[in-house]
Structure formats: structure tokens, C-alpha cells
Image: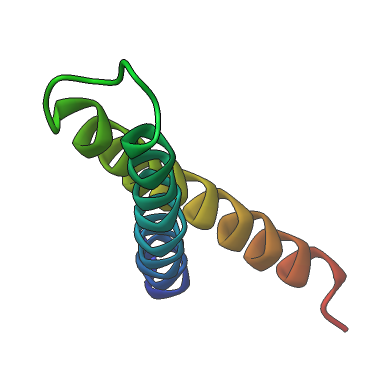
Length: 75
């Protein structure tokens, strides 16, 4: 894996961690006002882990596509 792709995966993971942590936090906050919600913390951790993995994959794919496009169109 090249350096730009690794950096893309890292930035994607960071964005995914931030975004889905906020998402899980808001879900927990909304759930506090409901009568029934998840009995434990596992669903919130699963959402954060999913976001971390998804962010890494999407970041790596976007950067890999951008690098390939740059190599093709380079003058």
C-alpha cells in the first residue's frame, strides 16, 4: 500500500471515528428520554467500530482513485 493510500485510510478512519462517535453519542442522548432503549453499551460501540472500518475503507478507496486519476492525467 502506498503512502497516500495509507494516509487516506488514516484520515478516513479519523473522520469515521469522529462522525460515528458523535452519532453514537446523540443516539445515546435520545435514548435516555425513551422508555425502552438498549440495555448495554454494545450497540454504541458497534456503531463506532462500523464507522471506523467504513471510514478507513472509503478514505483509502478515494485516495487510491485520486492517485490513479492523477497518474493517468499527468502531463
